[in-house]
Image (spheres, rainbow, N blue to C red):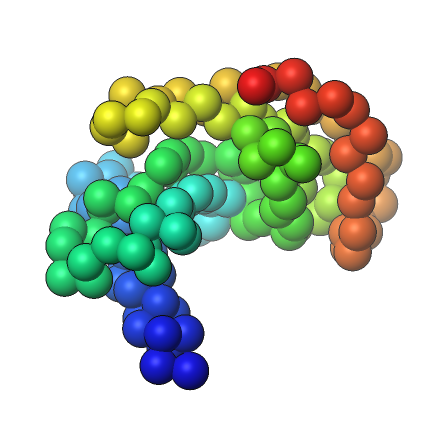
Length: 138
């Protein structure tokens, strides 16, 4: 129970530090913007549990990027962990990303947009998905 609480606090502090570092630089540019971006931050959860909780918050961030121009409605990883499927809040557009982390430094890793899938114009809520492809990003 104690480990779960400390993990939750660590993930929360990492999220806050990443969000602060992301928004501080663009605060003046986006002062009048009313839309929320669909920002994805991938964190090495195993590293957070094993590592020192008092280290820099960005140490365990694998990638951080804007996936959609609106809020995220759905997010799921493929079987190998290198494919990421995201959906907008309306559920009309789906993006498939390839995650290519760097072994030494997260800033040297990359995220590649692989596919865009459209599902009509009416809004929908995604509950479950089945990504039936071979995880070719290995």
